[in-house]
Image 1 (cartoon, rainbow, N blue to C red):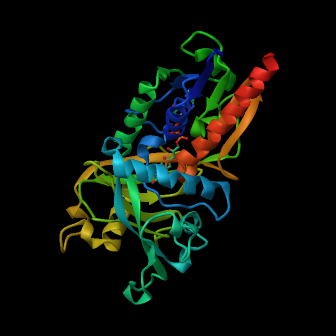
Image 2 (cartoon, rainbow, N blue to C red; image 1 turned 180 degrees about the vertical axis):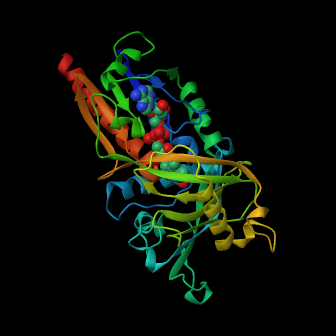
Image 3 (cartoon, helix red, strand yellow; image 1 turned 45 degrees about the vertical axis):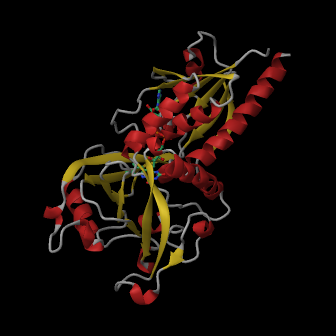
Length: 365
Ligand code: FAD
């Protein structure tokens, strides 16, 4: 029998866990996941626990980004339909567009999402344009579809459970250099392959030092109120990097209200003034969030939060590499779409991992 492939997955956010889960479906892969932060931790260096998270496509038509989002919908939809333990449910969704936002940070971020005739209309169920005579003043177009919202506090541990069932071993570890991770495999042997899923960490990780990475800071308020729909708009009148969105997490996870898209802002603490603006905008856009006649005093706050979206100029890096003789597959830089592109990116990473392992085995002969 061929000897197993020893693989270290570096990083335990949604990218690392999804990639490890798919790799673990091949019993010839022996996998260790090593990370500084694990599900259960809340830290500014760890984006995944802060996400909503929903499926609101933002990739430009024909881009890898869009293809990864397209490839992810069937997996998330299947989980929402058939696996309640994953913590994902379907939600009616409405997106509003204002033409005047098209040059703002948030307008550019949501440009594909808010298009009248977007590529994803044939991917998500029930897509339809909302007639213009039903739109409030200032809204130029809007659409309705069914999407999903992931309770990430349930879903990330669910991914760990799927991995552990397939024999994946989890460890804590902090690395200065990506090739050092090859020595962290639970077998004690040097790993055949390292899969680098360190998100924004790849900006400072030796052997990677990717300068194309930058944070887009997202501040949120999590509340007990239930708006009854997932709602989003292209921008706000409070600044080019402030926006409104709300989504209710499955299984009692509360409603996440956002938000902001503040490029190159590393601030880890919530800004109380921004928090007030987020709540005011949410109630103004969707008054059903609170009881009739109430303002933000009608919101029942669970917590305030801040996460840094790991954006990469030019899009995520999902690619093969060799660093100091160690075969590496990178899967990082997913900005504000790490969940909605998670399966698509991981499918590509698994394909690249197979190629890298084959190349390594041939070199050994
Ligand atoms: P991370 O979650 O940051 O994980 C990185 C991992 O690498 C961690 O385990 C960390 O400890 C480890 N690591 C890093 N460096 C080292 C090192 N040197 N040594 C050891 N370990 C290391 N996406 C969606 O699809 N839908 C949404 O609705 C959505 N909403 C969002 C809302 C907010 C407010 C924010 C902030 C993000 C949102 N996102 C959303 C984006 C999504 O959260 C990210 O794209 C995704 O979490 C990135 O996951 P990751 O696994 O690549 O990185």
